[in-house]
Amino acid sequence: MSNFEDLKILIVDNSKTMLRIIGNAVKQIGVEISKSAENGQEALELFRKEEFNVVLTDRNMPGMDGLTLVKEMRKLNKAVPIVMITTESGRTEVIKALKAGVSSYIVRPFEVKTLKEKLEDIL
Image (cartoon, rainbow, N blue to C red; front, side):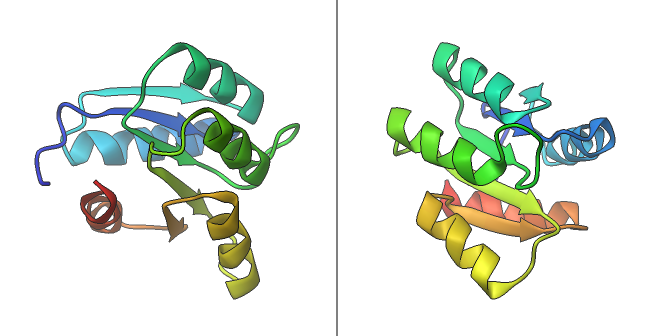
């Protein structure tokens, strides 16, 4: 799938800078609609209210971390692709994320091309 403009993406990160960077990356690949949340609880509330095609989430956030968020989202919807975008690159961390239910994993910093390829793989 190379046509991303119909996707609705939820971006979750406690860093406003990362929200902007990831938001710009999804715009560059042609995504028209994205929403953002600054923490896991806010993201879960949005996820309950709206339908998203993809969730892009950070791992390390205060309050509800990314792994807990993924587990909670999976209770609500097992099908929506969830991509974890994080600085955690250790094999153990990747395995924990996959067990929690992520569809794909991107280590920061990342290139727009990497995000596009990951989305093409999971959609």
